[in-house]
Figure (cartoon, rainbow over the protein chains, first blue to last red):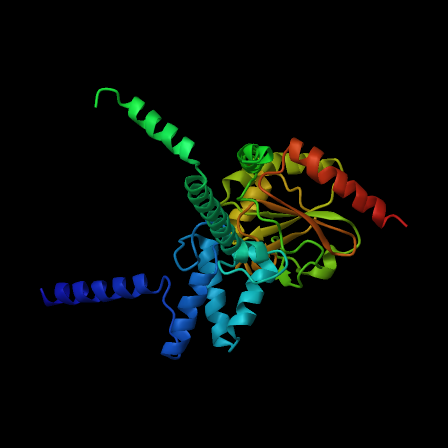
Amino acid sequence: MRAWFTALVLGITLAGAAHAAIDTYQFRDQAERERYQRLTKELRCPKCQNQDIADSNAPIAADLRREIFRMLGEGKDNQQIVDFMVDRYGDFVRYKPALTSRTWLLWFGPGLLLAGGLVVMAVIVRRRRGATSGAAEHLSPAERERLAHLLKKDHPHD
Amino acid sequence: MKRWMMVLPLAVFLLLAVFLYKGLFLKPDELPSAMIGKPFPSFSLQSVQGERTLTERDLLGKPALVNVWGTWCPSCKVEHPYLNQLAEQGVVIHGINYKDDNPAALKWLAEFHNPYQLNIDDAQGTLGLDLGVYGAPETFLVDAKGVIRYKHVGVVDATVWREQLAPRYQSLLDEARP
């Protein structure tokens, strides 16, 4: 009975260890852990394209996570690690693209569209306001009379 | 309202339609390689047959296809007969056995014929990582000076060879000729 119990406990602990070994890294401190988490969230998995490498189960994502952990251990800074990935997989792997001549439209396009929309809206509002107030003021007495007549005629059953 | 303003919505619609139509034929899963125009990364790995150590200098001299393959990759099996055919025609093909089990790779080569002149055993995937490999099969076109000139992701078949690889391979051969 005792032997069975020991075997059971041993089995459970070993199973736990084997499971944890899949993707567990020992970081030196909390800061390094946070950098690892930020980097794996900022880099995109080349295989499963709508996932970051922290999120992806693809083997390539696991390889990239291991590389990032290795480079953190070597004391490389974030920029060096991102450059390492971009050198191999291109700008594509960055969820936060660098500001270059090719990406400025991506960065500022939405802002430009919003500004453009606001300008168009302001022009329309101003023009319409000018049109309505102007029209009401410039009716001659004869026109006013005709307008009143027409409005009355519109509802003959009132 | 001015007359030209009336065609503005139509113009915007047509512009959008052109972009969306183009988008239908884009292949977002094929990334442009960051390695084009760069020298083949340096490496020092065993050959699949295990008889010698290979380095990037072994790739110099002749333009070649460098094919990333693995026995775990179903599409590699699909393209393998076509690679055999190309090798018979005299095309230089080298292999990178990517993250594979060596005995399984040897068995595969014995069973399905070996089109590769050199075959690099990249069991850890380190060379694959330096090449920006994200899935097999991938085929690089390397010139005689060892510079990567083109990359095709996916199966190499007659159409891909005829339309994408053959013209480029031929121009590299012409380039290498003195």
